[in-house]
Image (cartoon, rainbow, N blue to C red):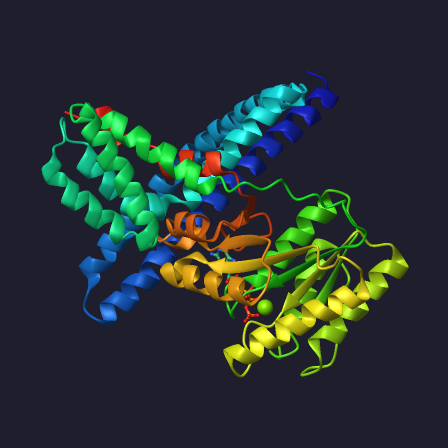
Length: 424
Ligand SMILES: Nc1nc2c(ncn2[C@@H]2O[C@H](COP(=O)(O)OP(=O)(O)OP(=O)(O)O)[C@@H](O)[C@H]2O)c(=O)[nH]1
Ligand SMILES: [Mg+2]
């Protein structure tokens, strides 16, 4: 061995010795630290004379450390699985997106929309359907029906908020169906009831032609709280969506917050609002709105009115004056005068309709709040007794919760389930 080799060997040996020394020191230090921690806890416990407890705690701490290690591993695994899951779902999402990206055939889209609308109407009429319609259904769901249940049927109809005249008309229909040897056939009686309801609701009237005058003036009436302002907002939104230029007249100068409420609806619908001073003359506000509509080329003016004045006589007098002034502003106007009725008031709505119709011409009815009442049958009484077409129905507070009234769709939604179909 040369001198140089000897030097190398000695150098390597001393490096190994140094390394071993360092490892030993490090492990001794960590043992010291662990012992110090445990000793510290023991000291604390010892102060309370609870050495054993401290030992148990140490063991528990060791177990916990071990468990935590496992849990961490498990968590990591779970997270990895989740990530995979998300990726899978992402793939599904992509597939869905791909499916959606394919253009839906126009006919299928229209069909889906019609189904959605029918479902929304059914939902809106759920409470009425669950009321007198369900009671009639229960009576007619017997396998055979006899004259004994006639009295019960009559009672259900008379208490159905459809008005006594209409109740009698429907009852006569049922009795007639029964006497024509259809006693064995409850389904035939149910069908008759449906058909007669459809006839009552189909008041002869051509659809509203929004283009027959420019501007077309629609005056909206009704007692306070029935939903005039809300309905005006919804109608305006519908017309604006259909490409019409609409302007609103804040003719309710009686109630302090009425103008602001209409302004909010105007903004929502995209229609300007002409307003006057609080307590001012409603006729002059509506007059100004018509003049502005003529000057600016608006297609439709919708005029809101107060629902309450000091007395009913005042209200009718005021509304007649409004009509006269509208006529002065625009020959042939108002082209439409719609009365808003709140279906939750039941037969009261029929009385209100009679009162307004006696005082002035009413060309259409809007029946609101059908979504919140079991008294929706009142629409039968209104159509039967007043022979004024129902133009729209309100089935909620949102801007799109207003429907053009379609008697057929209404009857289908109301008599949705044929209870006699499951007759035992
Ligand atoms: N659920 C439901 N609520 C409605 C409907 N239409 C109107 N409303 C609510 O009825 C309340 C009264 O509506 P308004 O539009 O202020 O009634 P109004 O006739 O203008 O009342 P006045 O200005 O006080 O005469 C509001 O809370 C509306 O949100 C509807 O179809 N369904
Ligand atoms: Mg109002």
